[in-house]
Length: 108
Image 1: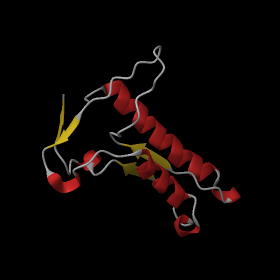
Image 2: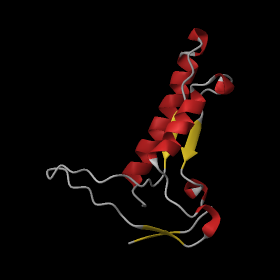
Image 3: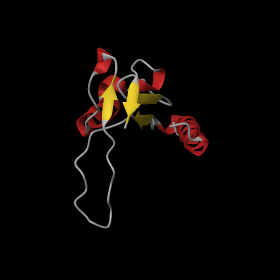
């Protein structure tokens, strides 16, 4: 969880999105960045790629579930909709509040 390479890469992607939003502003192209949290997923059935899903236990019931792929899809759908036409250069965390420590996580 405290991986500096991950943190630097994430910060770089966020800043790259902001710069791209600025670069394409005159072309009326919006650029935003979605940041996923811990998501539940269907394990990959390929024996070569053996994912190791981690069980997630939330100690606080503020958002007592893991994200599911549709959570990310709906955030992306919102950003491409007319309702988000005035949003550009933003980072949106789709993580149930984990990024701002609204929940306590225990990983086993």
